Amino acid sequence: MAKYSVNQRVKRFFRLPRDAARKPPTPYGRLVGIWLAVLAVGAVVTATGWDDEFGGSYLMAVLLVLNAVDDIIGGVRHRWPAALAAVVVLPAASRLTGAVLPGSLDAAWEATLAAAVGVTLGMAVAAAITRLPFPGRRAEAR
Image (cartoon, rainbow, N blue to C red):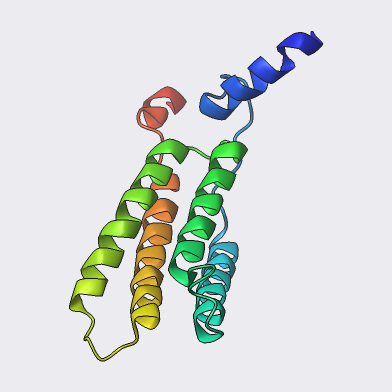
């Protein structure tokens, strides 16, 4: 049985067994805390001048992806579409915001502000998708 445990864990990451319990979506309070922490980390990295070494905007994106991976590991419903949508919305919103921001900002702050908008929209989209009901569940319950 031990030789199949790695294979089972990898399969569980991509597709949960039918009888497996699903984790509920992340509560709104925790999402707001994660969001504020991500924004604070990006602002601190940029304010201290470490953006050349660490990249505040990239660090914020990595933290968003880690939040999506946490939902995937926990087995939250609609976890894969939510993670995909968050990863697609993040760069799209960041690029659009970066194009709209005035040129009077420092380049590091411009990237951080654009990433903050991308992270905000990415987390909002992921939170909304993970709270969608399963299709056809109401018909089964009747």
